[in-house]
Image (cartoon, rainbow over all chains, first blue to last red; front, side, top):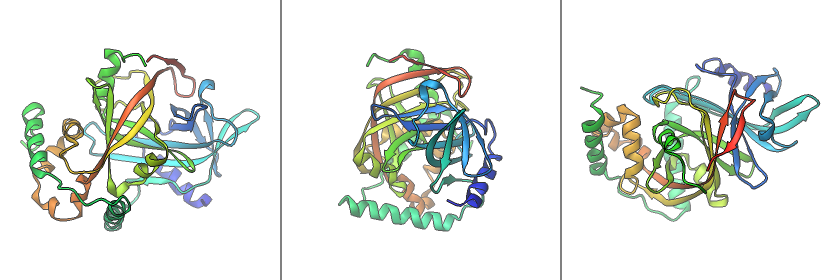
Length: 159
Length: 161
């Protein structure tokens, strides 16, 4: 990815409330399972983030990694996230993640909702086709029943 | 794996979102996701809309996953230690309406109040917004659970289950 697009994405991080300097670092451990750990990260202005991770949760040189920043409010209405992808670089005095793939950006900037719905619908259709499935009934009656139970138990936000 | 403590069970139940990691050809991919903790079965239920199918595709090739719990806004839990769960996922239903995902939707309706109103919005059933309800069911069986204590970047990591 270009430095310019990474710069735009890094700009979005400033909109995160909470702890913009503390993303989740993910990599795969020796047994093949992903490890997620909150780290301290600082952009170097180019294509790397300098990362402070616990010694017991540090990827090896060259390992694929991702960094996730996300936020949500108390009712899951305001949600936003950014995931960056790259490779671990062990420098003389620490760990850096060299970003080398297009990020996943959700709910930052000015989303093109029309295009987003078009892609969403296309992905849904392609998935059903690729796995040889037909679209199931969406069961609105079941959703309404569950919603009524939830309102009885937790309250009606519209009341 | 040892059974998780009641404190951890409460944390899994009350935390609004986890960070869910699947593994693709280019390494791990982590996204925030809603989860439902099914305490009596000791499993997590997650659900992906088919419109964002990529994690479902990745799970066909690699079922090893992790869920972490590091962000506690709206949970009522204060600021507990972060928790990492490693386990195995299975897409137990490749395409589902609400039936077959009742436990996921019950959790969603508890955590996200506006969804209780949206459930009765007949208008969204007639356009592409209905596709939000066309989903796959993912079940995750935990295999190892770790607690991470301390400041970000300097945590002590203890396997607890």
